[in-house]
Image (cartoon, rainbow, N blue to C red; front, top):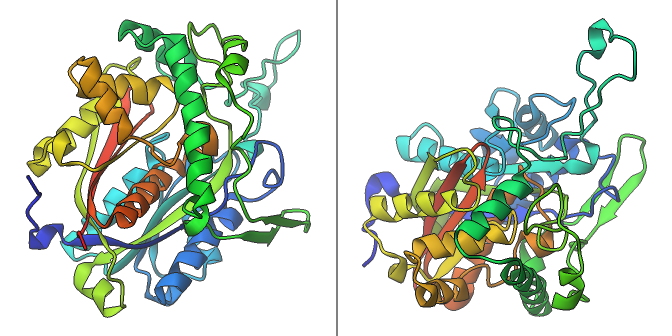
Length: 405
């Protein structure tokens, strides 16, 4: 079954770009969020042949802004978007960039926006420590210091790694299966990279950091060629998680993503023939600890609203917040049927995922979308499903369609 095209659904992703994803604490460490975020925005507009002055709206996701504020507004100005255009920042945790795309698509369908840019940026290397109470002084003893990168659920106080591991075991996904998935992520990344697929949408970062030092990065830094199951099996778990380790979780990476959304008719006028129609964009939520299964809820809702089934979908992207997430999500979508889950996994993250690439949280959602669209274009069209967990038991899903050649 195929989703029927309707005029109000005719918003398309016309072009996309992302920076290479950098390793934690290395080349991108001193970059401002706006400087980094402007790189893919500038690149995607150049690829499309659109002037920054033609952009009506820019929406950017950021999860850890640190001391920086109004990040989307700064990205827009740094990219040359006129100062009378709307720009706003979204924080929906890891969902943020995909949420941004959905919001711009909605504006396009409503006729509010003609050309919109969506995406996200994150510099996890630049996230500061927090000194609660320091402004007005503390009592005797060392002041408390909080590291936001020890990622815990802000509502329950439980580390995300614990939530993912507990839920994985609940669904029968053992540690060994998570380690196997992590090895798969790296291997598939390198297979796609060998064909030039992974870096095809990348924009070289060549900018100055805050201290005026040149920052140059042309390729992703996080993926490793020497990952094997034995090495991962030897790693200790983290934060008291029963299954999650540094090996079956993603790197704390830095990067930015950007996509241009517009009406199909305008995109065709610009000569863009390989377009991805936004079929559905949904947000949902569940119980706060349900980090690994809630993407399945969002995916199921997107399919229901589109009148589609999983059998209609050719490409699936599920964020590897931990290896547990795509494994549990596919298990839930398969109704607990192991054979059906295995079949779904064959279509999932076929170019590797965040475990290989890294996970700049505010930017990843659009990276998943870019990967799904590129895979659909490579196969000659079809339907893609993207889903991601984030926040306090929250999730986002999007379905896109690339017309079959």
